[in-house]
Image (cartoon, rainbow, N blue to C red):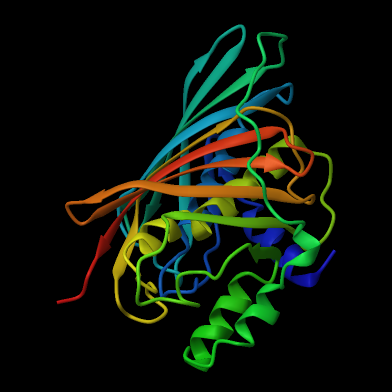
Length: 288
């Protein structure tokens, strides 16, 4: 396991300070605020620690309320909404400086057999044939060196490989509002199902709004032609998967309007099983 991955796992390992109350550390993201994927992942950890081990997460729905302060801890309070025979529901509120910054509802289910179908996995090149983040950023002379360094540091625990050029790599003219990345952790994880769901949640916030930028030929915050932030986030976990094995994140944007952009995506295992569905809306504004 890489040191960067161990550091990320330590970041997601919350301290329990009271029944149903947990505390997490923060760190700076690529932009000077707490990364939304970190808050979502930590909130899911808090919820999962109040749920029986035989129940796995099947969905989450969340709202980002305020920017997180990377210099302060985050307190997560879990409300036990329901403990049924098959489903368990939790609500988590993340608080900093006495104010809520994030709220999440998550549902967990015991395993059961049922109807099974899925849309097929779209074509994508083998991840081993694609450049690593470090290799790709090596060709971006138009980006500030500090921006490149922050990107690489933020993604050091994750091996994330774009199929095509990301928005900040080639911009200025609109492209198809569709993006694909392969990702996996930079090291093996334990077999705890919650850990794999939490790591996928963490990564899911990294690139989902890229397709909004592509549709308008924008490079994103890295080149300063848009400003934005995540507004809400939803995920459905359909089938077992491992976050330390390659996952294809197939993303698209069906709409942008009113200063907001919508991204939707499916995450597949390398052998073609649909593992996760994701939808997120974010603020995407053009600076005046």
